[in-house]
Length: 236
Image (tube, rainbow, N blue to C red):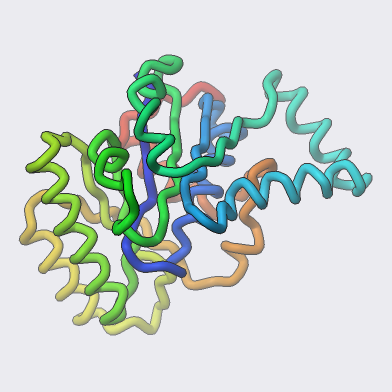
């Protein structure tokens, strides 16, 4: 059975597409997992746009061409597929995605708003949801609202997804008392696991994101998720 995974929150600009892209590419190229990405983040579809832009760059840049032909023949497979569409379209064939290859990873890039037709139908069928959290009032409020809605989906749809909170854009100067307070509130909910890894606040995360070439910046998070999601490693 495939694992359906989404980095998801109700607040825009928290880096969910960047994290999705870094994870999907790392798992496909470095860990050796079969990966599919569904870009349902209407209307921008930035994941699909990035893939198209990168393919155009590879065709016109000799250095990128060299990297590409070196990487993918070594993997003995092609780049992972990226599909774009609406949540309504996705909801209609999501069950079929679960029947894909053994332990395949299907990453779904959801919209930044949960007030989109089809969101509940898609969300209720996910296996794992990663909630990016920052130590500021707006992100924290949006994060709790996201958790509340997923609780409603769980009750109404009988969903069985597992929720993780991920500290994102973390600064060493963050107030530890504020972070501890947020973690305490999240833990009291009882249905969310806080990941140990913290994504640092750095513009290089976005600069290094790619649908074709892996970045080692995501290695620590990928290693923790590999254990938590019981993902089988197929490449040493």
